Length: 282
Image 1 (cartoon, rainbow, N blue to C red):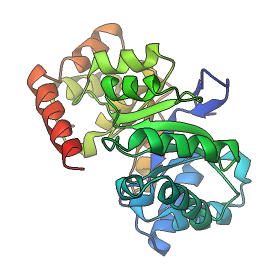
Image 2 (tube, one colour):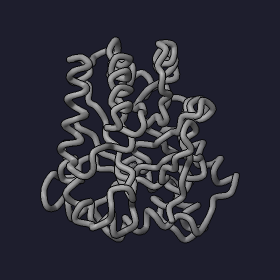
Image 3 (cartoon, rainbow, N blue to C red):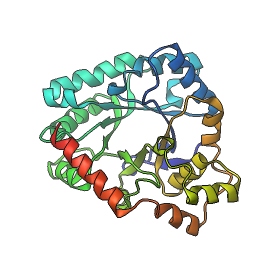
Image 4 (tube, rainbow, N blue to C red):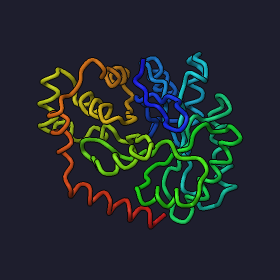
């Protein structure tokens, strides 16, 4: 069984190991990849309207023969809908549900990016959709603590349950992770594998040899031990199985600390500058 985390406001479980659908093609090849992930044991799938493959995900999950309630399915509302206002946000979410065509709801819907001046109204529309049972939970993606504070200060009625942003030993911002976890917001790590870059880092090589595991298993186990929801993607079935096979060992405190140390202050400040620039251009 998957390790799970509990949503603080409802006590609902979320499987920690997630199959991400970024760049999974919207065709039969994509369906085969997703069916492979189901066969490997994944039940938590992370897509987005921007990825263009919600329909492919729904087709594959239906073909698996496993009932809808056995899956935890996440999607995200893109920036263009936010800027067009609440009616466009509603249309985007309802379109995502229609495209998935597997059940009548998503388990979790995220605001993909906090588009300045629009994300509060986007959130309010998600609250309405949750009231209509079209989405079970509401979450955030790429929100900084300051943006979260702005959202909360606008008297929203339903607390966000997740914030998804890049977290890995190569981009570790402990202050941000701890901030959200202390607020009862689960942290979901996009790019948990850093797209495979940095796997030859000497710290990771030493730890993988010591435990006789792969670099990917080291990085994913680090995320599990940090209490993160861990999003990983591969189109290779053997690697799907391998990426889930991370419960038979644990990393020591010294190993965790060494992995934490891979991210430099410069890495963090460069990333924060990039994110600020991206948000001001939205």
